[in-house]
Length: 188
Length: 258
Image (tube, rainbow over all chains, first blue to last red; front, side, top):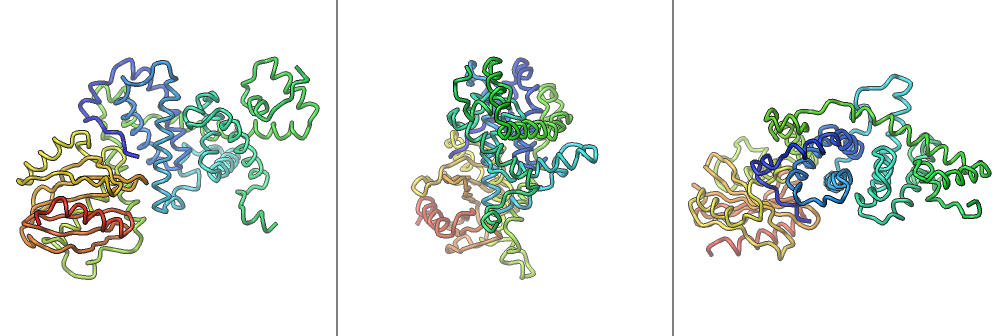
């Protein structure tokens, strides 16, 4: 897939209007959160969000006014996040990316909550990408099912079935206290 | 209402609090009669809450200057604020992925400073920095190919044009000028359907103005160099060797005055 051509820097900054900033700025924290939860790497995630903002600014005038701005931004973000994850796995460096949430989380939580939170994030990290994405978009980012379907580019029914599978898998893992390992399950 | 079957989608929507009140009441009634399902649904609810709590801190972090549109609009934070670190991290990642396989000439005492060996070194460095850059891998995009070609032709003081590698499944992304000890070099970047990038690198040669095609490799980046009539060529990427060789031959047949 060819990358969208980038506008030279000057043209981008000239198109930055007050109104656009007012609409996009409040959504940036959520974009960072989704990016970091998907990539599990602080700098990589912020770099990704910057990429999203640049593209959004460049395409601002051509976006469909009727569509939800949030869904539009998350669509750009999600696709770029998948690109990065694929590139990473091609390079075989996914294993070196922070598997310990405390390295990419914000400030460490209080001790007892920290363990709980790291547990749920560690389990989340072991879900397949598409399940992780739907769970984050719906449960954490509070996108409507229709918005999530638009972001993931799948039918609504697929959102519902993925959501169901993601939750069930996460529940089983949390019950076991370890990621479900296909090989282990066979042995047992 | 109660004779309508409760679907799994209803249960999920109940977890997310997205059912109309009437319908939600029906689901709650059904769950009251199915305790096992009720405990599963309860687990999903606490899971969602756990995720929200665990991740809420990220959204509360102050925005770095590079991501703050307001600051940027006031001109206090250029777009590049965040970039240098990230680009360096990317390049490091690329080299890391290359593993222990170092530069083929590392065993020798002398780093090549001229000839196609030096050109190979430059091309690989440029590939490491720019091919992995998702933000601005090129200065001029493929849409401005005409401007790109004439810019390169002017800087390299000879006619230069981007080879057409569509037949090898490679689409031109664009290009940028690179600085070398030997003056300006031209870097064209291509991308295949798998997202792998390929660099075509050209610069004038003071020595080895004519050199045969030679395979080169540094870590995970491999390719070919040659020189013809004072112009040096490098074709580098992370694709399989046979693909790289095919692309290099294609570049050569289009760009060298044989």
